[in-house]
Image (cartoon, rainbow, N blue to C red; front, side, top):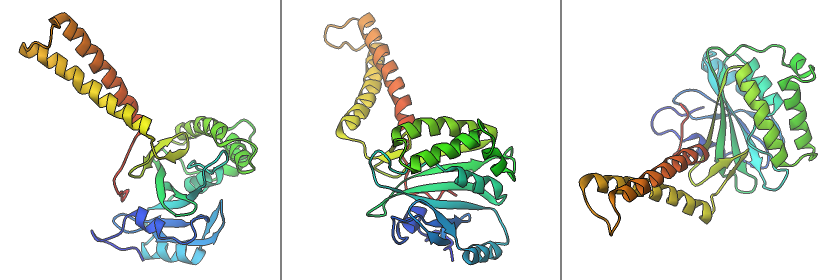
Length: 270
């Protein structure tokens, strides 16, 4: 039973408490409640919901819309499972009218720590899919290519890097076709890049610090010019140019920083 109220655990806490992180787990969640574990058959690259647990929770909540959550394990290496949804994940999500959001939580294989979340949300324009199988059977369709891409990676025929490049393009097509919204949320201390959550190294942290230094240095030079303060022997034109360059570099750096490092605190999703 999901806890209600302010004292409830975060999804991260609930997921990390699930046993055997090498195997996938399945959860469902309603607003202002903890996720409920509805795992049935669990394998290293798949999980089936327990029909009895799932039906009980659906009846208890009178068939109201819910969030569908399942886990992926992270092992590292060229053929590690990434946070992207498989063709089957998307099929189940789109075909269930009551599932409004799908969340894939990536866990470390050994410790069970949650590294981040991949989220797909339906919109008012999202159609209900009843013929995903026929879509996969159409050679050249996004659904067909997605299924082939995922299978190739699962069999170790392509590296995670090449799989990520192709999968991102295919997911972009599917998001447009089915009017889905995507969000990627690393947990605290992690960042996301092309299908993987990772801990930034010292060089990346220094580069991020340099972005903020350039931004505020640019503001300093420009504001010093405005107030009439003189720094060393720099004239106003030099200070203006230097301030504008630093400020522009800082803005560009902040833009890429915000795209690459969407950090989040402990999240409830909703």
